[in-house]
Amino acid sequence: MAKRNITPNDLKAAENLRKIWGSFKEKHDLSQERAGALIGMTQSAFGQYLRGEIPLNTDATIKFARLLGVHPTDLRKDLNLDFKSNISNAIVITSPEEIELITSFRSTPEQGKVLFKNAIDVAKDIYLTRALKRKKHE
Image (cartoon, rainbow, N blue to C red; front, side):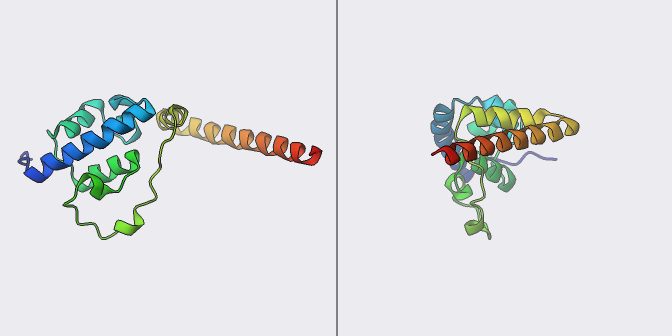
C-alpha cells in the first residue's frame, strides 16, 4: 500500500492534537506509551501522529478525541461527520488511578476480566452497605 502524502490539513490536525495532548498529559501525568495503550496503539504510532508523520484518519481522530475528551472536529476541522451531535459518549479520564485501572483491565486476559468485574461489584456492595449503615445512624 502506497504511503499517502501529508497535506496541510494533516499538519494542522497534528498541531491541534499536540496542543490538546500537551495540556491533557500534564493534567493527567500520562505518558505516550500509557495513552497509546488506552486507545490501542503503540507509543511509536502515538508519537508519529503527534509529529504529523502519520495522517489522522477518521478512526484515529475519534480514538484521540475520546481519550482527550474533545470533539473530533477539535482535532480535525476538515472532518465531515454525520454524527457530530452523538459523539459525546467519550470516556473522560480524570485521574491516574482511572488510567491505571483501565490499562490493567485492558491488559488482563478474558478470564481475569471476570474477576476484575466481580471485584468491582464486591467493592460497590461494601461501599453501599457502609453508606446505608451510616445513614441509619444519622
